[in-house]
Length: 359
Image 1 (cartoon, rainbow, N blue to C red):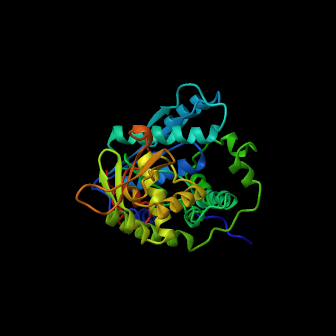
Image 2 (cartoon, helix red, strand yellow):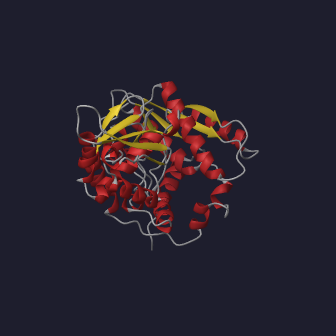
Image 3 (cartoon, rainbow, N blue to C red):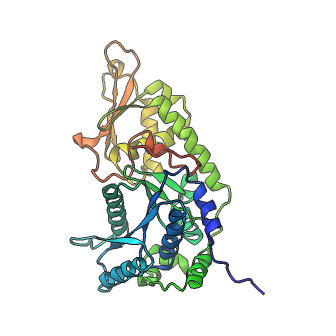
């Protein structure tokens, strides 16, 4: 006879949060809340955790405006939380909605609204309720796209953004335990019909057997991120607002895997993109970087573009070392709402204890 899933207690949640410390005195947490079971469970646990430390929690409810019921559901969620002493703010995705790539655009808008609210309230920590099943689905989707080792490591537990740290304390927790936690507290939740809509990839995956999540992948990603951070700090020179310079010869000495990771994260940061370039584009760029000759000797420009960035090989007066200069393409300043900051903060999405929050 199988055991019923246990609710998550305060001590267990405190242990999950310990990996993200240290926190400031009287910590203030923002929690993304949809009204579904996962985010409701998270905000209640976060409220108890913060209150025990003299802090508080702010629930951020995004109304995407994609269903007729969304406004009333957001208001009902706000009222439910208010009855439990949790301040809540409804954020609206206004304007015309896209005809294609709806879920991707909605996700981009959702995180933009959430991080803007964190900046407005001066909150450093944004919690989201991704859990073990979400992680398995993410790995399955990335396997289908032939992702590299970072992709197959799944979602990171902590990611540094300009406005706040994105924290996922429930990544190791099965969803049935979130359900048990809400039932023990007598809390109702809202079921979003899009979660079962076969037009969307995650919904299709939920109809299949769950993929087994590699146990060592997250630890391996953390080790690679530490190496990436060391390479970035040692090799990259940042010239505000959005120019990065690195030595051609030193870059070539990194070896292909490390060079690819460094270049990918660098392009991601400079262009303000949510993800690094695709592997095939990175591979072609690495070939160009390794084959590039000194412009003065070849007589030809070695400049090229990659994912909204321009890479120029230059040799400055008084310095015989050729250097690559990376800037946003066509004089752009990078996206105003870029998820990833410039180095070094973009290089610390490793999910390890003591990860710094850098502006």
